[in-house]
Length: 326
Image (cartoon, rainbow, N blue to C red; front, top):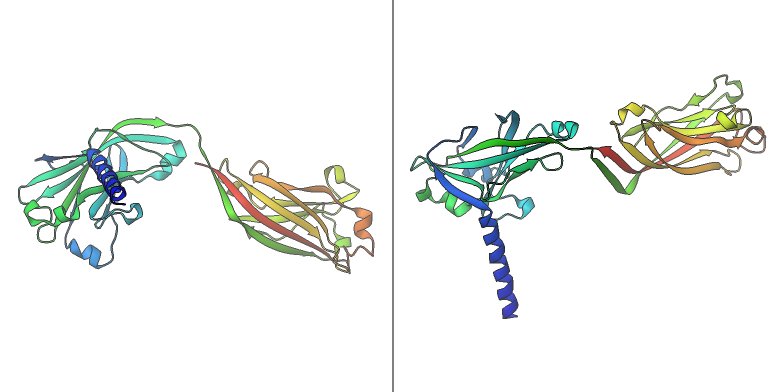
């Protein structure tokens, strides 16, 4: 047991050494040229429950950036006893829109107010970091130990005031190819909608549309052709599920939907139903059946499809997945 504990401890120490080896610290008399963040009453951040502070935006290399500081460490990354500081690419939409990749060298600064110089923290290998649509934040989980930061002799925190800074230099810009994100839902988003059509025998329109109903961040509608459509024309009722406004889908995105359409039997509940799955998109906004139910059966008095000249149609829609362009 003792050996196991020792091995675990050695592994932990090795891991910490690797992390510190990736970070280089140096001293500079020159102030950061791109941004300075001065924080007064620093201790009140924690006392007031401010676990994260995002700075204002600043320009560097033709892009907008901001700093994100965790005064007690980034808990989401299990950081303890250290300040965490990150550089964030602000205009994320441009990364998505143009497939842009920005490579940048950056350095963080911490003012020693006693000696009037700066502790500079940067990547030990001076490696450029790639900011892109899937990764638009880089930085250091362990910028500096909180104990060292609070130590008055180091001059970083005097009169409860500290000064951070940043420099960002662009080394390369590229545009990547298309990318896609598929989100599959553990429990599909389900919705039911019942459509009551009155005075059915007096309908003169080629087709009818239900009121829109909402499911999976989209509005849907039922389409019914009383005298049929396509290869069901003149012989069948045609029935479809359709996106109300396909252009609301972002370009290149699509939704995998399982749906059931029913013409309700209002007498004996022997409903006529069709069930299918379909990828809905701007180019494929509808799915259904040209031959849903034959006209003779639909109009038969014993079928229950048409009672007192009223037809009842039900749609059950379950959205299982969404694919979108990044």
